[in-house]
Length: 427
Image (tube, rainbow, N blue to C red; front, side, top):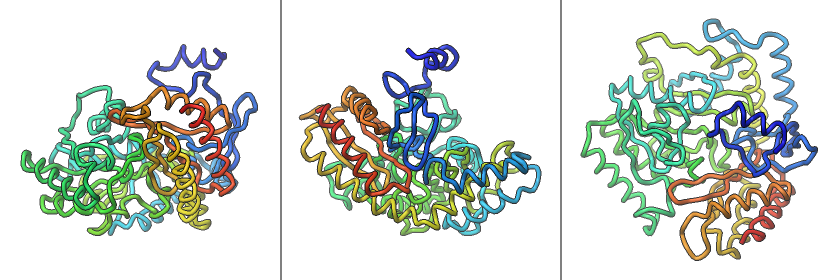
């Protein structure tokens, strides 16, 4: 056990998980690569949990952070803040929400907390609809709506939560239906749930479930849900913490795959916008955002140095069409991995879109999760020079692949080759 690991164990919580039997310390990054304290280089296919969106040590971002830090780092929301206003203007425009207002937080968890506060205050209801297999953060209220037992350490909650079907296409009671029948069945389930309760404040949903293993419904499900929600006045919160900023390739926001009945009432975001800096936030229609009748500020949300990073990162993302690159390179990577999976009995499914790819592993010949194989593949990939993530929900285990959106075709092939070797060495 190395010295840093020993020190970690002495002063940090036992539940603060580390990857790998021999945890690594990452000390340097450049582009799509990182280096550990032993000087070993890795191709990064997880990006700090989908957070390094564009590239490690992106010169435009590091320059913006350095210049802003040389002026002022922080002043709180009690004073006018030019970088915060400028980033809010851009996010409001990109959100697709009419008359949008933006509130910045320090994380996706805090963003979802704020969205729940707004929805429940606006609707005067503490009942919330959420998706099975969902994850929305680690705060008390976010845990209360999380539909993933592995990330829910308590059943106590300030909210009454009801879970509906639809977030997982290939498992559950509707898995055998075609896409149209699947959507119809999920809508019928939603209607049935609403018949048993007073109207909830909101439905919160990830367009692609992140921690749950990158599962998603057929396109249009949430648009179909919206018709039902609108009849009751129920708000739609799109949790875009992992899907936002073009990661899915086909769309800038994940909700745009379900846009037939317009944008969500509230969108939450975080992770990739800061490229590693701590930025989260909420976008909502003005009447919803302004519904609070008590004081509310943020000490660290919107602080100048993080806003400078967000502005530079967003500009780079848009100017270099990284969404288009995610679509093109991600499409090639998915097909390459599907070709490998077709030859391996332990790979149940390769799914996802853009550079948000899940590889579900099972015990060969079954539909059962295989956590031992998952751990073995992660270790073998690391040994081969590739860092990837993991996830899953009820009796599922999945690899999570989310490189920076500037990934090249050559790097995608390099990562796919390492992962193929790791899979074949395991199965």
